[in-house]
Amino acid sequence: MKVQMDIINEKQIDYFARAFSKLLTPPKIVLLTGDLGAGKTTLVKSLAKYLGSNDAVTSPTFTLLNIYEGKFPIYHFDMYRLASAEEASAVGFDEYFDKSKLDGVVFVEWPENVAGLIKDVDFVVKIEKVTERRRKIILTEGENASCN
Ligand SMILES: Nc1ncnc2c1ncn2[C@@H]1O[C@H](COP(=O)(O)OP(=O)(O)OP(=O)(O)O)[C@@H](O)[C@H]1O
Ligand SMILES: [Mg+2]
Image 1 (cartoon, rainbow, N blue to C red):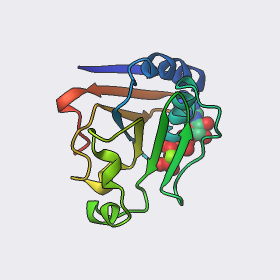
Image 2 (tube, rainbow, N blue to C red; image 1 turned 90 degrees about the vertical axis):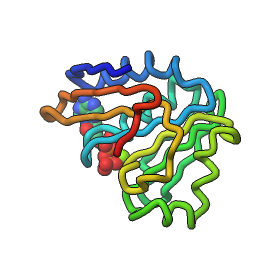
Image 3 (cartoon, helix red, strand yellow; image 1 turned 120 degrees about the horizontal axis):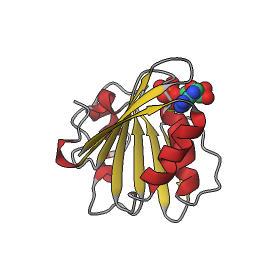
Image 4 (tube, helix red, strand yellow; image 1 turned 45 degrees about the vertical axis):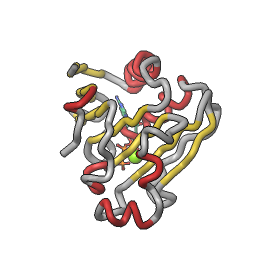
């Protein structure tokens, strides 16, 4: 399944998140791709809200992983500062991507940087910046969902 949407402002990203969140029953792994400033973290803010979290969502650029408390744990990764799957494994990240043990929903920004680490992907959301406020969103589901 692959769907594409034209989003005209941040409010519509929030609407998209509200609908998409209904599909995110644990365990799920969601990859978020798109350039710097595309809106990956902005989307996670809305998704965490609709998954029942009141926690403040911030970019995990330096922490690499933020965990929010919602109806279930929400794991928000930012692989921007990592250079390989090996680096991610070295800091113990593999365990989060083992579906048989996952108790929540995982969001990963910059998954391209750790290619090969995440094998069992449920969805990829690709965000393309069209103008300052417009975005194109391409949602891919299932076995073909891969950022590589
Ligand atoms: N329609 C829109 N959807 C998402 N973000 C938007 C939209 N319009 C404007 N923005 C703005 O674009 C910026 C997106 O920044 P954000 O941190 O979410 O990007 P990112 O993809 O996570 O970047 P990075 O790769 O640096 O982590 C925010 O300042 C947000 O307010
Ligand atoms: Mg971000």
